[in-house]
Image 1: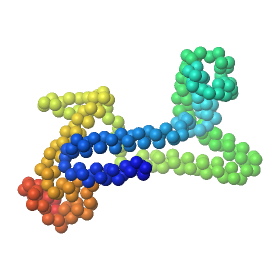
Image 2: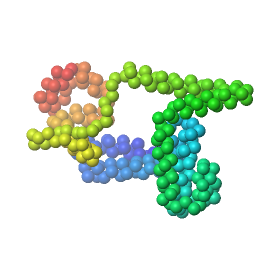
Image 3: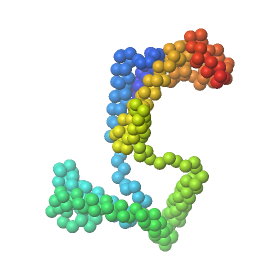
Image 4: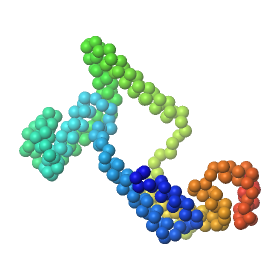
Length: 266
């Protein structure tokens, strides 16, 4: 960000964009900044470490099937020539109960990975119970060894996870109800109600309606006055507060209807 001076370039562009729509040069500069921002984000994402743990609470059965699925995927990459240390991948496969991994075909490796994925899906229903059993076993081992530090750490983990689950249910009951997922989008087209249920159609409908409303807002008379510059995207909150409270005089170039509305608000 600092090397490419994106903040400074955005500020310079914002200062020049005083009207809507912008000029061709302003649009091209906006596209360049957007493209460069996306490239920086992708480069940063490529440098991040990959999180390979499953989305289930850790326990020994979950670990076994997750690592076995990973071994099958490594064997698939061996067939595709994308593994440097093939011997390491074979040893890991044997360690997780995959017999004779060198003679497995690509389809067998894919079927094995799918089977492990299905087994992990079955473990989802009892993953919390397996997690508690795992923590209980770790606590028993730590107490038998007389390791006070490990015993304290395991108890803290158990207490923290119980508190997280308890507060989840408390917030679920006390918070305002949340709307579910969007399954359809409706709008009137030439007096007829049109219903969209496919994802692409719903996204397109929302985009078209949002674009129309933005264009409608920017076509208002107030956008061509000096007040629009003070109330733009980079406006000062104090200006808005003074306008709403009536401490700011309405500019002369504001039309009568808008002026009456501002007087009514204040």
